[in-house]
Each structure stands twice: as structure tokens, then as C-alpha cells.
Length: 115
Image 1: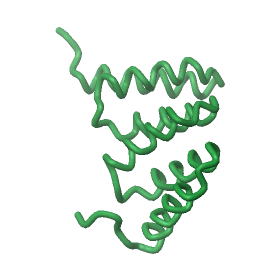
Image 2 (image 1 turned 180 degrees about the horizontal axis):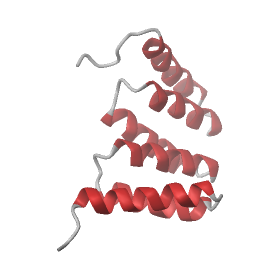
Image 3 (image 1 turned 30 degrees about the vertical axis):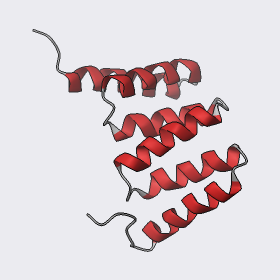
Image 4 (image 1 turned 90 degrees about the horizontal axis):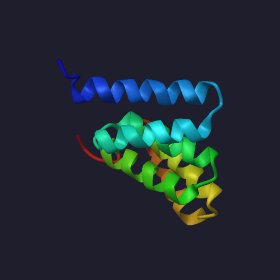
């Protein structure tokens, strides 16, 4: 019996988290990339991939993942906060301020996109 997409995705995600926990950022990035390739609608995978890429100082890839996360969950405070940090790391201050402003709106109970 073959595994479902969700089971495969979750196994890869767990492998990425394990690699991250032991400090193997390259392996974590590889696993999280597999996760988002397998399930492009998986918010947690994009968020985790973006954060690892930021730690690896691959900022353009991190920002791309962060943008995908905010696209999937536009009212997620953590996603906008992380995206702001990615922009700061890449010295894109105007973009960082915009993402921070969105995070602030969410932090006080507002919405970026009406649900």
C-alpha cells in the first residue's frame, strides 16, 4: 500500500525538523525543499524552508519562500514577521518596513485579507 501525499510530506517535514534540531542546516534545507516541491500548498513547509535559508544566508531564496508563506496565509503574524527579518537580512529596508507594518496590523487584531 502506497503512502498518501500527506504522509510523505509529513515524513519529509519531520526529517527536516530533525536535521534542524541537530544543527544540520543544509540537510534541513534539502528536506524542506522536498516538502514544498511535493506539496506547494503546505504553509509550514514554506515557512520552515524560508527560515532555514535565512540562516544559511541565502536571502533571495528565503524571501521567495517567505513570500509564498504569506501568500498561503496572508493573515499569519509569524509569516510577516519572518518575511520582514528576511528583507532586513538582505538589506531591503523598504520591503522590511512594509512586512513589519503588516505584522503590526495583525498583532493588534487586524487583517491583511478579509476572510
